[in-house]
Amino acid sequence: MPETLLKWAGGKAKIADDIIDTLDVLNGKRFIEPFAGGAATTFRARTRGFAGRVWLNDLSIGLINFWTAVQLDPAGVSIAVETIDAIYFHAWQEDVDHAERLYYANRTELNTALRNGVQDLNRFAALWLTINKWGFNGLWRCNRKGACNVPWGKRYARLPNLEEIQTVSTALARTRITNISANQCIAECGEGDTVLVDPPYEAEFAGYTGAARWGAAERNELLDCMALAAARGARLLLTNRYSPELAEACTSRGGVVEAWQERVSINRNGDGRGLRDTVGVLFKRDL
Image (cartoon, helix red, strand yellow):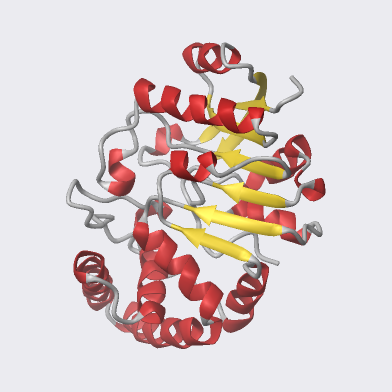
């Protein structure tokens, strides 16, 4: 099974096994990702035999539309992908300038759907993949109006085929997919739930959704929600870039801090790639 269909900044594919083992996901009843992103940990848990329910949530309506399309109609998504891929691949081989124009035309179509509402969910999912695979460095970024502004990546990368899309769709069986705030999602968590909480790095949220920036106040509200969910019997793991301030905020609410090193392959600044200190903070009732 592929780790995920999407290359996603901040994705946890490389430490997914550590997350699954720390949370004891395989023995839980339901696995929840309030900041789903590429959902790499969910797919890794499925590969390792987790058969329970899953809840994927994200504040990005485009991302949620993508996962919903894959879940509901993998064959339809694959047909839409093949159509776009064939046109772009021909242009890439014959006329790179035309390939660039196609990328920006796809991006404009995607933004129109985000602004006015999605009419063809499968087509939208295929367009989303083109930004992810052919945009600059696999980033997802948008302006304050919520429009994607990822520039062309000057490349061709193969899009997922029917078998890969179908496999991921199968893994999304028994999965609830929602577009609400992470705090609302966590407020519903309790006994038997294992929860991966992977918020954006502070001050970087605006580039993800076009919403207000993510700072200390938002972080602390999230941690309060996590502590309450732990008191109800959920097991939650926060993952984020390490800082003494974050560690103190977590331990003061009963979290137990672990430190990992995580290899970063997506960054707006190439100098930001490499090993990064990542904090994992476990919240559970019996601490």
